[in-house]
View (spheres, helix red, strand yellow):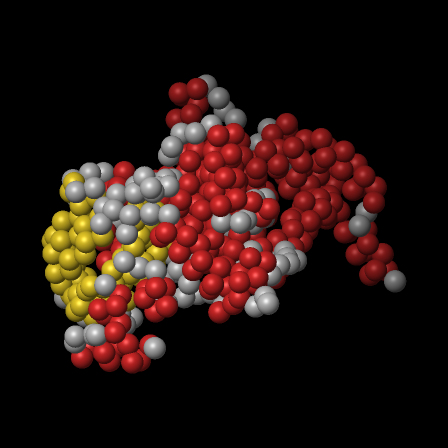
Length: 245
Length: 252
């Protein structure tokens, strides 16, 4: 039984070019409801761009995106993004607002909750990530790990159907990585549908249900963690794994 | 000794100053503040509009903002004040019956201040990290809401020192409206000093005016320095270790 109202996500034949630079060249990604898909690959392979295309921060040139088996390309992109939470490498908390206001802002302005309701909901989310005692601090006074957990709380507060993580631990000091990964693992186990772009091979291998290896704007290999990590079929994946492991 | 006496009498004739100071404080100071503060306030509003137009993805408003800014930043203040103040005076008189030149002086200063403040705001807004807009859009905010709630407030905060500098400039430039021909009750600090100096043949009233300007501007200058320093060095802040992560990472 899932504690989240998660949905499935599917991207088919996604193409994207910036000028003559073809960043994504026919990407397919299928993330069934309640599962965690990790996306790995060398930098510049288009992983982060793929996330941004799937919540339409960048519009694809071609292809389709289905949320709960329904195409969302015709919808208002703002509506779509309210259903997908996103966590960034650089946290991107709003530095001019307190921690609790960071979490409650969208609840008040988008979900139209009253100030008290939004505050209560935000505190609930902060409790969940273990930071309710920091509610009145400014993000700048928090460590990177704490900031990232607030960013996760901010995304979860909107009760998304899918969560995106864009190298959520890459900017953290090594000793802070575990706290964030533990939280992500909890979400995954709790039944959240997640797409995790990551360099954390341990997380990819142990927590995710499927692993997708991207290189040069295409999916080179996809399958279960065991398949990819123990029996990589392509030289490119073998080369990548030997570089990072 | 005689030279020194002469200089003291020319610039620091306490009696001449004493005579002019009451009027400077009761008439000149309020008028100077009205002109400077209202053109500063209106300049901020129009400046913000210009800044938003200047970063628009649509080339038409961007172009309009560019041309406006180039013109009103490029003209001497004295010329703009004369053209606007004298040029539109008759029109205003026909339309409203008012012959008060102060509103037109404020309008002229506002036109110039908007151009400068627009550029200040634009640089501030553009200095905000792109991730802020991205994070806000990712939460489901529209471009407009993201700008209003997240990006613009941060951009403005960063340029507050430059904005206060602009206000200092306005306090000084407000003296130029004397060109429009002010009635006795409409005179600002400079004009009162100037009139008194002309009547008495002594420059001390102008020195008194100068002192009054300094009393207004020096605290603001120091406020700028203080804000600037604090922004560069940040408020003293203490980053506590991440208890939870420390527990997982290093503990036992």
